[in-house]
Length: 93
Image (cartoon, rainbow, N blue to C red):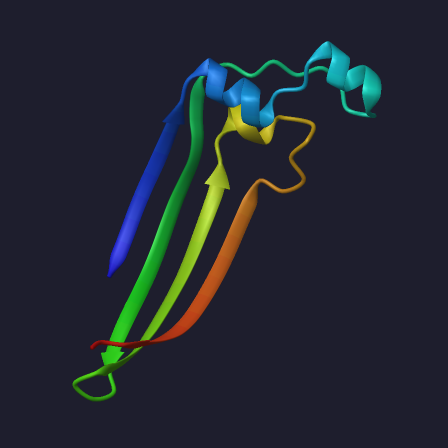
């Protein structure tokens, strides 16, 4: 399974999750930041499933994400890119 996606966010969402108000800036070392609406992130993932027998399945997934400019430019963001990997076992009743 392959998946590609992008998330667009309005100004209110971006401010809540990536913005820094004047009060927050005064209480921290971050600069004031008021993001505009825009691409929050793009994602790509690849997953696979292998049946070990009729009830047991082995599952694996790797994913990569990249924040869009309005989010990535926030002073609270440490990294623009992210990656993850997961391995699991499932049992079907």
